[in-house]
Image (cartoon, rainbow, N blue to C red):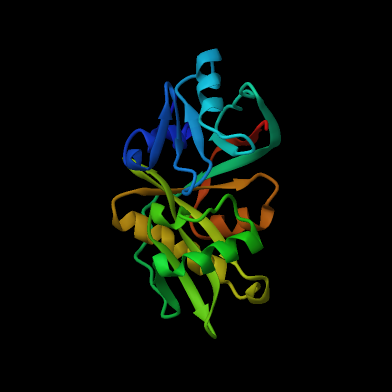
Length: 226
């Protein structure tokens, strides 16, 4: 049976996050300042052409779906990698930690710098506007964060789990995941997340936090030809 979780970007951009959407016919994407995640209603010729029309020359679109998205016209494949989608089927208990603080718009440059250093996935100038982000600041420097990305009725995604290389090995990633997922649960949303299938360390962390494998997914990144 098809689940809304099989096509998270499509369902987010056509429901709770429609205000962040840019559309062309049967295709939709997040505003480029938010991120490259995109989707089309169908993967037929019309749907793929509409996806291509959403990108400027040189711009990247990203797809996270259960089934691989075919290459749209006039675009080149940048990366296609197996991934896993994990979900927390039991609502996590409320969680807090004295070192964790809410991050705001004024933290945006630091958040982007940490994401660019650790590369958890696409994180652009306004990705942090998608939901609440949390962080740990030590000696005036953001050393760990996590937050909320896609959301649609009943579900919210934990995303951008980052720990600075100088702070790894201290369990900070686990703290950040637990805080983000408990905040989603407090909003009545089931937490879910994605990881590359070969990222065994991240998957192990997510399991410790109460996530279990829901589905294999495919992450595809394509670039519009110049």
